[in-house]
Image 1 (cartoon, rainbow, N blue to C red):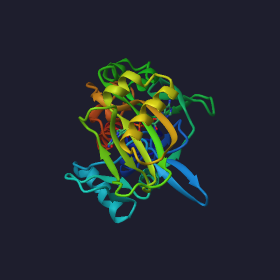
Image 2: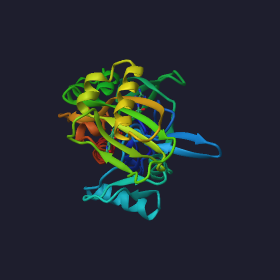
Image 3: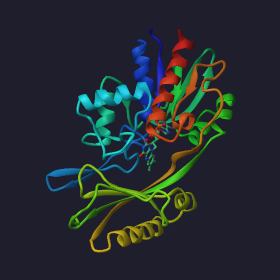
Image 4: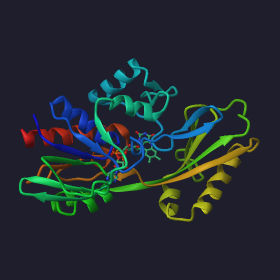
Length: 310
Ligand SMILES: Cc1cc2nc3c(=O)[nH]c(=O)nc-3n(C[C@H](O)[C@H](O)[C@H](O)COP(=O)(O)OP(=O)(O)OC[C@H]3O[C@@H](n4cnc5c(N)ncnc54)[C@H](O)[C@@H]3O)c2cc1C
């Protein structure tokens, strides 16, 4: 089917939308404002002498409960770009060697352009017009799937009131990620520490592509109360918690990343496609607070757009 479809966002929801459309014979284009593929499934490189290590400062792992995502994971494990993480039931997985490798392998036949920010979307007869910050000219499409976090999507889709109504119904927790390394790797170090429901400000700490690069995440309560505060204040507060935990080791701060829209607190309810125009929304905000849910919502959006365009 020769239809022109654009997908906004190269996170897991955007990638799954594009893969599903491709399976129907529609070659879509994905655009994303960020420097790298993946959105909240993110990887940050740290160069040390001639080699590199990688922090995973967004999603730490993914699980697979649905048939569709299990297939993705099993292909990844067979292709060696996904590997099991830890020893959990249900199983947890990570990209191999990095989270970005997972996404790059998954999308290697897709058309993706990074560093392109969509600034406006408007109806135009039976088509949809899109304006970006790069070519700065309106371009017409037969279909659009927009995968920004719900509040940003709400702002972008201001000409589509019914979708805005859906997007208004959900909410997110923030999360603050602090990346650090050890001067000397402590003996007996695990690969992760889970602080779920424990006192303090942390929810999780885990190593990245190797045992010397670590990310600490703050818990929902601390994150929601403090995400807007001064970065030095946040750095000091989180570093002091980490130092207390690794009291006998020397820790080196690397960087801090504040995720305003990190994990879905309340899912959005309502239509996923505009009743008149071929504009659909996808993302974790429709299905649940994790990578697999975002993937599933992308599949659903692609089905809706395909049925509308055929
Ligand atoms: C700190 C943290 C820890 C997490 N831990 C886990 C975990 O361990 N396991 C798990 O399963 N899930 C975890 N999650 C949740 C998981 O990462 C998300 O649910 C999932 O990645 C969301 O994918 P998405 O495609 O819906 O959205 P996103 O990944 O946010 O993708 C949206 C994309 O849209 C792009 N964009 C935004 N505005 C524009 C614009 N105007 N023009 C073009 N592009 C635009 C963004 O750059 C982004 O790439 C975590 C999330 C965070 C932040």
